[in-house]
Image (cartoon, rainbow, N blue to C red):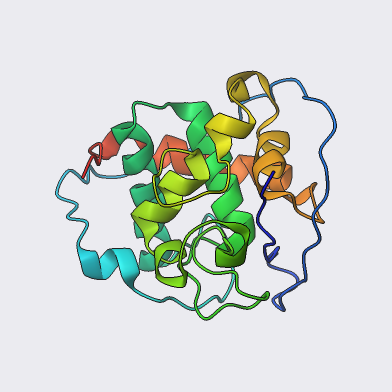
Length: 207
């Protein structure tokens, strides 16, 4: 099975960390939901342009309570794509925690771990698409979910078709094959906060 050799990023350690493929054994139970949302105005006017899809962004850190405009837009976009595929909260939680750990919700460029890049630090050499495709946000989200035609790497729906019964961190690890598998679950509260903040205020993206 193809996996991604990705960069694990945490706020206390801004320098990139190398990845090694790690096999996940067994499925874990579903994690408890944490309601951390705040009220935000409706954002039905979002327009996801090609410039937005491909814009390179730098990495400075992640704090769910102090998102900059790029991080907020990327979180909303992920939720829009999830909704566009008819998927719900559990798929969103898994996708968000992965993007938070891998890139702090930034379309990170250039590659910092071998040829990895984009929101999920997907690697072209591991079958995730071309260098341009892994940094195209729609294509990257679709590839992570396993709903793309350009990626040869198995995504969430192929690796963990029963993902709703899994712990979100374990499901993310099953796709990403990280050398630091515990880091995904650490971001579940942040993902839940983003869901509560934006999920009912985005329009499904189907383009």
